[in-house]
Amino acid sequence: MDSDTQLFNKIAREFESSPVLHYAHLSLQVRDGIVTISGRVNSFRERKAVEHVAKRVAGIKTLILDIRAAVIPITERASHWERQNDLSRDDLGFDNDEILAGGA
Image 1 (cartoon, helix red, strand yellow):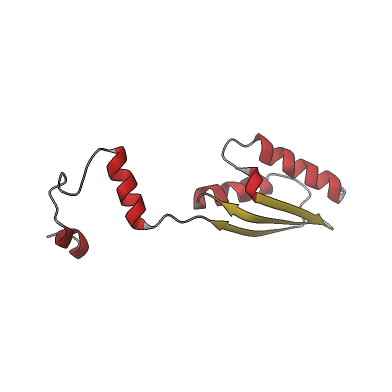
Image 2 (cartoon, rainbow, N blue to C red):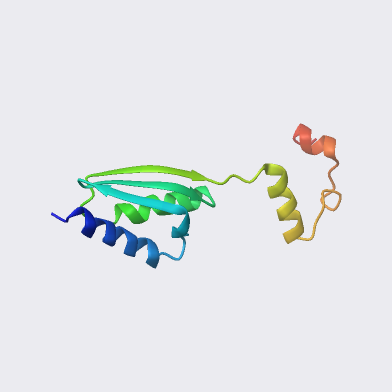
């Protein structure tokens, strides 16, 4: 059975080696084999990656995730998509009423 310090170090190494995670926004605590990871991440995908990475580590009795994912408002997501694709709603052939009503 790993000590709490050994378990902490194993999890920290897994996080540091993951290209998906931004470890700086997370807090890791281990006590009696109970692992608590708290903080915030940039997306739900990243939150799921935290869970996946932690579950790969043997010796965890209980895993507690207190992680909040940043949520981008839908208006910002649509605007970001339009900028990336150099499009506007006019280019797509919709007016605002059609978009809000779900199209004709």
